Image (cartoon, helix red, strand yellow):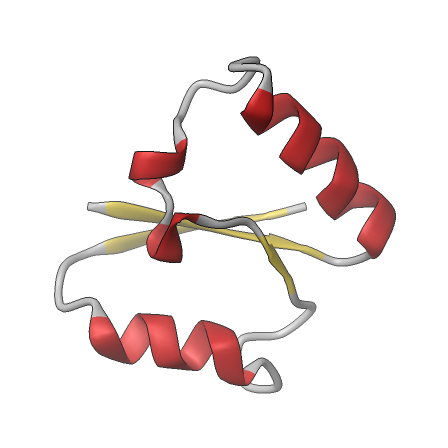
Amino acid sequence: MKLLVMCEGPNEKTIMDLLLANNCLAFSEDDLLGSVIFHARQIKKSSLVRIELNAYMGDVKILRI
């Protein structure tokens, strides 16, 4: 199972990236879909998120920030 983390704004994404880089989260880069945190408000409007979701065949949990 992978975790899809979507941040609404660039500030939230920057904070999440810093927390991830400093091992301050309950998950690691290996747990993330595409190994990144996405700056996306909606799944439908983000082509990068849709590409990653289509490529991964397992279960995905979504965390929206």
